Length: 277
Image (cartoon, rainbow, N blue to C red):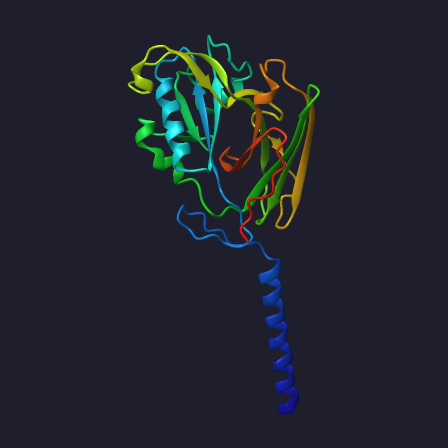
């Protein structure tokens, strides 16, 4: 009888160990996304999004542009989007939903800058570079990879999202941006030599179009070990001045509009996931 008891305990223990091994292999990976956390195998590099509400006419906006440049010099995990508004050659006409998100009960006073869409970048931004960098990490529960072809007046773009965690109620936002737009910039700051206006300022990462709803398109199949691909085949936006300077930004947001992760890509770039090995 004792022999049967010990045999039963042996197989019961073995089954528990087997379940434990399976859970380690197949369960979602625990995420430590602190800025100084060591990379965890199977997770993804985490980048921060800066949405810069700006205008060529806005004298204080040059201050934020300078802060973004300093932040990008400090880290290659910073993605910026310049959303122009007002009497401006690059005015983004569809700004309404974003204005309602960040300034629902008043006019959209510029400059405005948001980290990961909903966090206010503390003034003066150039003194708070670390606030943005603290939102980057070696570890994120999802990663993005973009593959694009821009040719013959058309954009073909695949946005892939891979999951190392189980998620729900996620949305995808995809932007078309343009670089190297040369136009004067009003400047009330001491930056850029204190010149006002700056006669031939280079405006980069200018929002030209959103290929999704500005507030995001719903993602499905957002569970551990899944990869979701969304394809966009569209004409180049009519207000793009030079198709050679097109680039893309894609990001995934939670139900509360907070950005989980973001990725930028040049045209005709084929990316791999930034996955920790």
